[in-house]
Image: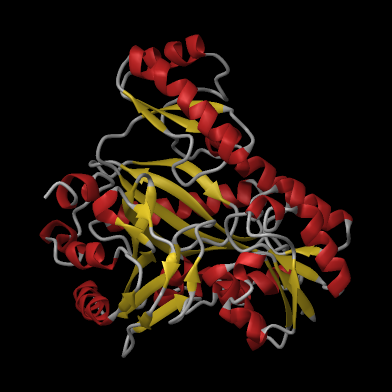
Length: 448
């Protein structure tokens, strides 16, 4: 096992990685920007290194600064968390050439899965159903129109690199496609430094379902069940749960098997997620692979009892998975609500500022992953995520009851958050029935 690891991230995931390392007896080196110099997790690190100003391009996204910190601190490996450089193949390659371990998938897999058009092709070769769309990227708007007419409107324009809903546009006809094409290209270039786009058929009212996978260097690959991530705003997830409600058992097994089959086909190692859309007839289609730890990983941890962060560390250190597929069992139901510093009543406008009071929920079946505290100044430079509220119950109804109670207990004052929105959702009859899709938030909550 590693002796010393540098954590190249911030916020709640930096603290989560740090905790896993400490339980393994691994020393942690925390890098931070000047905007994060009062972060709680810095107090528990064995060493801290400032890597630049608050602007992420000069700190958390600065490969030279992070590699220099790793060399100064003499670490064995780097954990990138999620976001920032987590799926940057160049960064993983620099780590490899610098003889510093990269705690994540291989450079080759990151390159392949980071290009969604190539990932689609890999899924097709593996016999996994994909959403009808362009073969590879589309370079010109005339080509985009031709593809859209062939597969039929409406279509989604999607950035080949990146995610989080950026570089994505819905087009219902030639006119909207032409205007959206350039907007998506510009957004993708600004967000990911890559304006390549591809076209997919828009699946009406789908569920967004993903499968957590783990693979080691010996070729062992397992799944840790599936998660439903259909409650979204602007294609960004707000609530996740496992198992997926209203999914036929036969479809569930086929979807899980497809994820493992694809992971084996591309020789996937470490932790990742295979994402699908599931239509109203329970047909599923591959959409992408996230070659990193996910924000919503605690949901899978709660229902399987597997510590995904510790498995990441074991795999990166050359060890085999500590669990086999036949040992993975679903125990109860888990739900996660992302707590963000944003105002849902004002188009989800970010709300940075000072938290004057912070009282997280607690009690049986409740877990809170967060880096904030009373007096913490939420910076305006980064993602608005303050933390995650996760609950576990013997049944879905039990988990829903616990989540409602936990949301009512949770207090964040001084800034606006989406806690009131979560309370509304957890009392919505469609959500409680489990028969919701990706249009749910917009059509059944925000418009009422």
